[in-house]
Amino acid sequence: MSRLDGKRILVGVTGGIAAYKSAELVRLLGKQGAEVRVVMTAAAGEFITPMTLQALSGYPVRQSLFDQAHEAAMGHIELARWADLILIAPASADFMARLAQGMADDLLTTLCLARTVPLAIAPAMNQAMWANPATQANLATLQSRGIDCWGPDAGSQACGEVGPGRMLEPEAQTELVIARLSAGPLQGVKVLLTAGPTREPIDPVRYVGNRSSGKMGFSLARALREAGADVSLVSGPVSLATPAGVKRTDVETALQMRQAVLEQVVECDIFVACAAVADYRPREVAGQKIKKQQEQLEIRLERNPDILAEVAALESPPFTVGFAAETDKPIEYAQQKRKNKRVNMVAANLVGAEQGGFERDENALTVVWEGGQQALPMSDKGELAKRLVELIVEQYEQNN
Ligand code: CTP
Image (cartoon, rainbow, N blue to C red):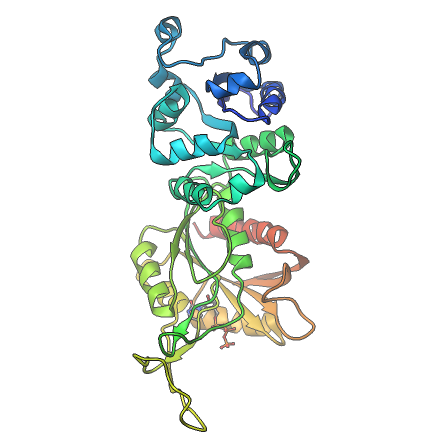
């Protein structure tokens, strides 16, 4: 059986040189069993002919909102609802801007506005156009509305420049379509996740912080999303892009993180505490910048609430997963932590000079639960996150 049998994909083609690759995309989607309809913008017609896309999809290509014959056969609202997924490939900078503005000034933007189905874009443009803050702001807007952004790839461009902006290859897009449309094991499951460090202010310019990069938490958010979950991420200050389809709330301090978690936790089925929450915060925060007058300066710290323990102690808690950083005996200490905080699973990583952990792209984990444990060997954090999600799925299903 082909992996997209019975699926309906609407491919939107906008104006850019990468449009020639849309032909291959349409062919590959069709080869996987999907029924494909193509809508082109006027600018796309400068790069590829409707005839090519019609021949490959087997259906007439639609280009205008005001085509009476087409509208009579299937109205544009109907077409927007017909699809299981709309994929805009390539998505030009102009199209992203119009989409972010919610415009309906041609057939494709109108379809996107009227849709109720998932929408993904595969941007393609000159690297400077991609890096431009205007495009990045549009991207952030689109992602915050749950639109998936696939790519772009980095490399040499048709214009002769080098950098990010190349459309993701049709093969990779086809795989993403398959992943997006196959029901993952966490379909319909709501996951709340914390990630990154917290910053505890000392005065208006200084803070107590830690070296967490947020990479593990963000990789987990992506892996959970790919497993079909509805993911809400509460993140401390990090410089990482939000994974596609993930809802993100930014916070700075442990108290803000606690607040954001408590506001969202009632709705969630699984809570994953991946953040490196500061255990202590300065007791007093100076209103002005502290001057260097004394030889020694004492800052008194007070305990922060333990967010994970608080969630686990709720009357009807979600399935809880915590992390632990240990310098030795990871299994023993992790089991202790699991019991003390009454959480379902703890993933422990060994930290120290020789080990993985903070600020690295790789890590290894020892995961423990009641009556069981599993070591996940050193690997890329993206890969490790996928393995950990498999264990979470197993244990979550046994607990439900
Ligand atoms: N955690 C939390 N809120 C805090 C502190 C920690 O939610 N205020 C969560 C972290 O996100 C992580 C786990 O609790 O999932 C870590 O537990 P913790 O006991 O802080 O682990 P360590 O930092 O390893 O503790 P210790 O220094 O006591 O070994």
